[in-house]
Structure formats: structure tokens, C-alpha cells
Length: 233
Ligand SMILES: Nc1ncnc2c1ncn2[C@@H]1O[C@H](COP(=O)(O)OP(=O)(O)OP(=O)(O)O)[C@@H](O)[C@H]1O
Ligand SMILES: [Mg+2]
Image (cartoon, rainbow, N blue to C red; front, side, top):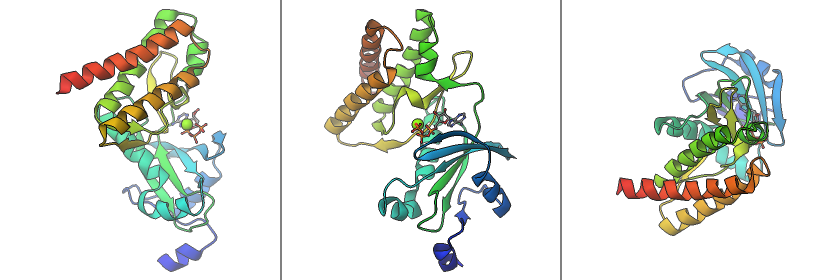
């Protein structure tokens, strides 16, 4: 059975998270209405299944690395675990309901994440660009700075920490998506990763807010990290 799955050209999936998706549902999700398409992922909305009404279909990035790694820790699993970890720390993250991995090594999607669709959102940069009120802008940036500090204070690096991965709804509430966390035990390395993340955040802000606010945001991230680290000692 497993062997046949491995060599099958059609999509065969394994859902180890308890949320079993029947075969027609998987097939349907592969052709479901596309909400967003990027080089490495398709976000599709589906008929609700349990609480999941959206799937992220993830394409392999590099061959053969992803084809091998997916049998141990596929991308959807990493995102699923990171979203749950962030939620446990009180950081608003996308509700995730399960993940599946495509069994065939050459499958067109390596894995899929089942999640809740967040309607009426835009990413944090677009939200800030469209928001002329500097108090509202700063409120969001400060909340994001607190999230970032909380992650690094716990010794974790966020692999894709930029404003394109924070969804904001009409009332200014944020949701972290596309999460991947890595525990970094070496203090120097963690500090280096934190600096890289600050650069990524700064770049992803582009010109959405004035230069002074961009600087204040960087300073606030550093300050909150220092405070959190001192407080937890
Ligand atoms: N649960 C969701 N609800 C609503 N929109 C979503 C959801 N998940 C993803 N999106 C939309 O799809 C886009 C891409 O999702 P995601 O960041 O997870 O994939 P990605 O492969 O990293 O894409 P990109 O390279 O564009 O960042 C998001 O910027 C967002 O607009
Ligand atoms: Mg993304």
C-alpha cells in the first residue's frame, strides 16, 4: 500500500493530525477556488471541514531536499506546530486544524495546511500604507514589536518574520501567518538572527510609515527584548 502510494503519480495524501480528509475532499481542495497564489504556495478556500475552511497547498522548493524532508517534517507540519506554539504564548496566530503530506516523492504539492480563512484582511504593510493616522500605525507596530520580542526572548528564531506575514483586519487586529520557528540555543547566534529579523522587518515596511517611525519600531523591538529577557531572569 505504502509502496504503491510512493510510486503513484496521482496525489495520495497522509493526514497524521487526526483530522482525516476523505479522498474526494483532498481532490476537491486541489481544484478549490484560489484565494492567493505565490511561487511556493496556493491558498484555496474550501467547504468547511471541522473548523478548517482554507488550505495552504505547499509546493516543494528544492529537489531532493524537500522530497526527503517531507517524510519527517514537511513544511505544513512546521507551520502547524509554529502556529500552535505562538498561540500558546498568547501571540495571535492563524488557527490551524491539521496538516497532510503528499506521499509520492514527486507530487506537485509536498504538503497542505488546514486552517481558518481570515476574511477582509490585508497584510500589515498595506494596512499601514492605507492608514494615515500615526497613532493607529504605531499601535499596530508596537504590538508587532511585542510579538517579535516575545519570540526571541524564548530563544526562538522566526524564519519568515516580515510584515507580509501579518494579516490585519478592518479593526486593526493582527494574525501571524506563514510561521516557522527554530529553537536557537547559542546566544550569539540567536542575537545575530534577531538582527537579521529586524532588517527583514524594516525592508518589508518599505515606505509605509515615516522614517522616524521605522527607527522607533526597531528601537522598540530591541527595548522590549531587553526588558523581557531581564524580566525572565
Ligand atoms: N488563513 C488565511 N486567510 C486569509 N488569507 C490568507 C490566509 N493564509 C494566507 N492568506 C493570504 O495568502 C498570502 C500568502 O500566504 P502565505 O504567506 O502563507 O504563503 P507564502 O508562500 O509565504 O506566500 P508569499 O511568498 O506571498 O508570502 C498571504 O499574504 C495572505 O494574503
Ligand atoms: Mg508569506
